[in-house]
Image (cartoon, rainbow, N blue to C red; front, top):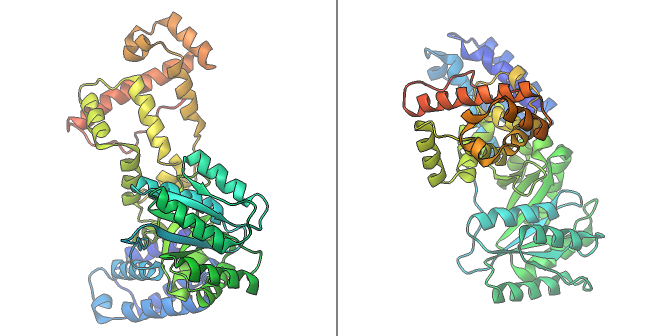
Length: 442
């Protein structure tokens, strides 16, 4: 996400941070580099021009140029303006006080509307809502089946009328059905086209008049760059959208669409789709995204993911076990499974502040967890509870059962024992987390 832009801006910011004196020429040189980085990231030219102009005006102020840390002051200005560009603060969904809340998903074909319908339903259910999805993409082959498959995998109701092409009738019937099932959110998956046309817009306008949605959410494909901005502009002018969700943002190394669309349409980005799994939907936090772009990390998002994976009771129980060195192999297995739910290790690493590019770019072998899983599950309950009984004969059996060598078992067990001791010392306040502490390796 934003990898190319992030690398360029971080290099510019590094040069600035240590500066104790900045001349007007230094500032112009820096802004030229920022401008080129944004244009190469496919950010709209008008947006870039205004962005650079604001930073220049604020940075040339007397309070900055004569401060003791002008470099850091300019970095702060760049970050603040980047946050403003992305939307200043998180924007929440328009939830009706008189349910059901109706959310209408619109966009071009291939933008990811149907998948987002499933992701958003899953997200809202975690927030305590009872969502229902409505299949109103009656033109694309298999669109209805796709939504029904998503609904089945999530165990969420899907309303569909496969033999009916009247989307207004389907939607109104769906609202009646939602009320009878006490669903408090109805998400309508509408049809898209390969290009914007009059027929598509007329159908959406009529549907809007009929169901009176509380939120019209435009789904735009981040990978399309400036075309995403053009699409958002037309949909907003003809339909009047309330919000935008960026799909495939995890694959967008440039980030031009996300950095342009809010400024051009004046509509907030509310969600970012950051992966293929149905859990890979995140609220769009402008301040966190700006911090990631500038290499300042995103610790708050890591905490959110951790809180989702670990309940408070589980965290307290884990801490107690660590203090007593009662952290077993079963606990280790459970912890790794929960950490995995938070996302890939590489993604989490990228959210940590101050991580150098060469470290972020290191390929992490996610299969290592599978190998550890195979070792632990090849043990008996007694062995997992008390690893000290693992003699040579038992280790040979575990190696054969897990497809590893005895040396691998020895290496893992040595690492695990060391980790137990380290965790006990950390939780008892005897030491800080070692910077070099890593997951046991083979």
